[in-house]
Length: 147
Image (cartoon, rainbow, N blue to C red; front, side, top):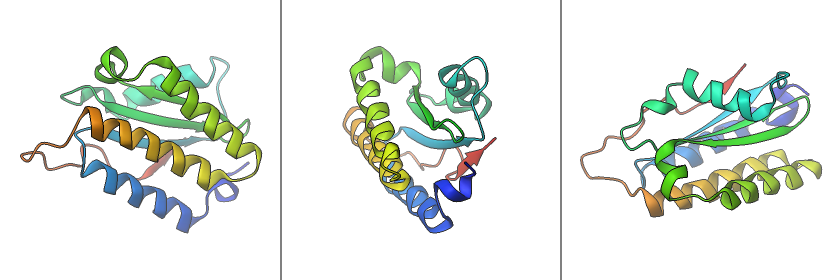
């Protein structure tokens, strides 16, 4: 499945706008990455590698989150940095986010699945890592990356 069949241009822009709106309320960072397929190492290993490649591991509070989607298999992983996983988001949170996306994708509702995941992650980040007045936002580009 190509990216064009997954999210159209308007849907991608709506996701990016949603991320920008969330990032005003938090020092956290959310990024969505669409990969053509997962490697033999698996979607979680691919997500972790992409997380580092995008520089999401360099946030001061270690509070970046990557939503990684392998389009061919529709496999999904959420990768949160150490600041989140160590004290704020138990594994059950990530399981719920991934299961929610997977269930919604099974119905063909890709935009809804990604949007709800971004919303859930954004609520957690805003609660646990509220924005600081001196923060200017936008640590990594607000776009949907691809590989």
